[in-house]
Length: 114
Length: 112
Image (tube, rainbow over all chains, first blue to last red; front, side):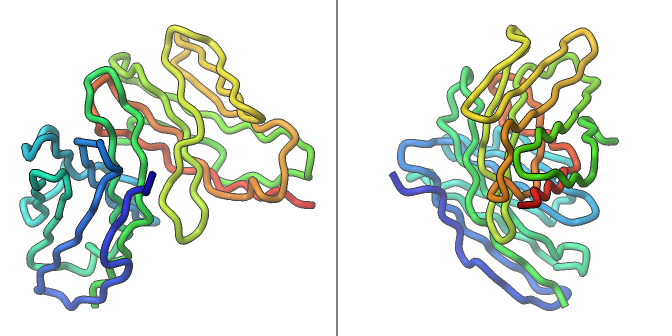
């Protein structure tokens, strides 16, 4: 079974621009969660989507948004980029059933904001 | 504030040693405690997970010990190998909620 895939793997943007990252979950998984990983703040939860609906949201500004499509693929968008948005953005997929928590991470997208 | 506290920040052991990584939490609603292993340039990989109804879980060379009353849990790596050199993260969540709260990570180096 193929794992979680994320595209692109690397991105360089400048302040003020916006960016869209993509995530394809493991086949059969309906939940997609996004995390930001930085050396200073570690791994922080952004949001989770299940059946095209945002089910949970972390403590990030409204510049961070996401969506999920009917095939469970997900995108996250960051508008008006700031230098502090430079990070590894990780996507994790899971079955999404309430009794299961196991999440499987993709390789991440390394975003650099100049 | 950090919901899950992890220590040590870094750890160096000889091959065959037993590194121990500790985590503590405050939120008693947490009932799912996974450990992840991350190599440079890769995403975290689920290693082993435990729920509070058991005090210990073993999978291969990896063991989680869980102390519910102390709100602490730890990872032991038996017979550590150089290939175990990676960053290890503990995490916590409530059942059905996929927002994992991660510890700050422990960089493990196993010397041959």
